[in-house]
Amino acid sequence: VEGGIRLAFFALYLWGISFIPDVRRLFQYHGAEHKVVHAYEGGEPSLEEALKHSPLHARCGTNFVFLFIAVAVLLFSVIPAQTFWARLLARVGLIPAVASLTYELLQLGAKRRWLVPLLWPGLFFQRLTTREPEPAQLEVALAALRQLLAAQSSSTTE
Image (cartoon, rainbow, N blue to C red; front, side):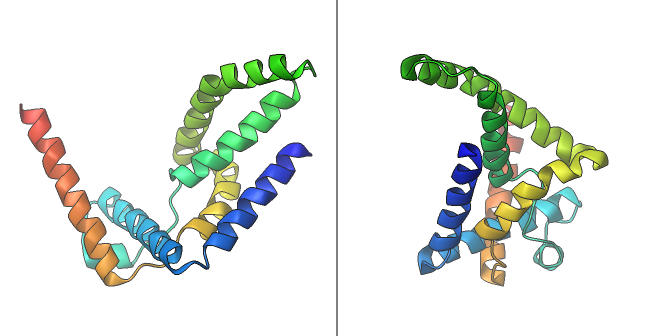
């Protein structure tokens, strides 16, 4: 129950801040990032190609956050009730394990079709954290991708 309440507050928070103009713009850039990544993964990182794609992406950090919360809720629910300090120490100590498991689930969900339903809740949250970008925002995302690829290329040749 506690975990469900946390997720509900998280969703309500994301929905609420999406009405702030600067945050809405940030969410448009987030959508631009995803569209450009889709175009890059399809082999053609161009404005025309990016325009065709969805602003949602299976390996988004929003999916990671949602899965992290869900995995933590499930894992922490099986830890027996203890003193406050013991419970806090157990939760903090398990953060690396929860993060590792979450990362692996996210990677598997993106690669294995039968695990795609695992990503649906995170994709729902992405509907809160992404917006359809303007073409100029896609150009910014494409420029960032080109810079990243150039930096990656120069670091591998050194």
